[in-house]
Image 1 (cartoon, rainbow, N blue to C red):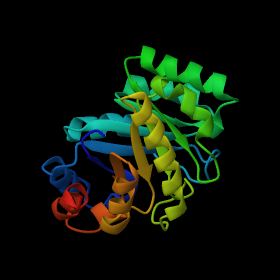
Image 2: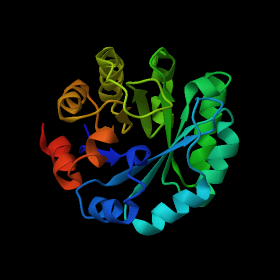
Image 3: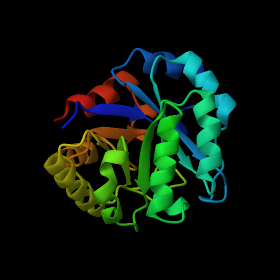
Image 4: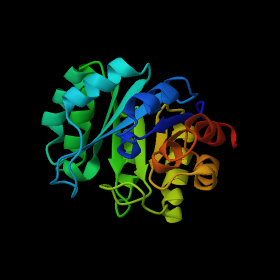
Length: 220
């Protein structure tokens, strides 16, 4: 399993203290910044556009981990690749079928950007198993996508275990990310199940950022 990475989600950033919190984040042990893109259609919320991503990219020296929760992932993948995304994760539920999913994975990689595929809580990742080598990451949602601050769904760890078993058996480099309700306790459960990227929003930004990142990073 790869080195554990913490990816704080700016969905929970205190926008009254942006400069201060970004400075704290940049000097923390967090290596990725999780950037949620919502179109108000695929999920019932509306968030950030490409110009905001460009601003964050200038403000912090971190991997831009862009999660597009949108109904037209092909269009938005191009938009955010041009804006400076390092990783673009789209939803399996937003494409027609597994063939379309793989075509989009290959397209995103052709743009020089790493690619992830996300599954909602009610979606099984089994259809992805034969194609994991096409993906740099699989994102397991441990809450319903759309809003921050939800409670962690522990049953989603079965998906993580399934993915970890297949990835290890085949020797793939694919990472497993989890997003939703992550704190010190649930983060430990996720790592034990096989995750190597933890997305954490409220837990990080509503406390001491350095301390919270370190609690997630070193808890194992």
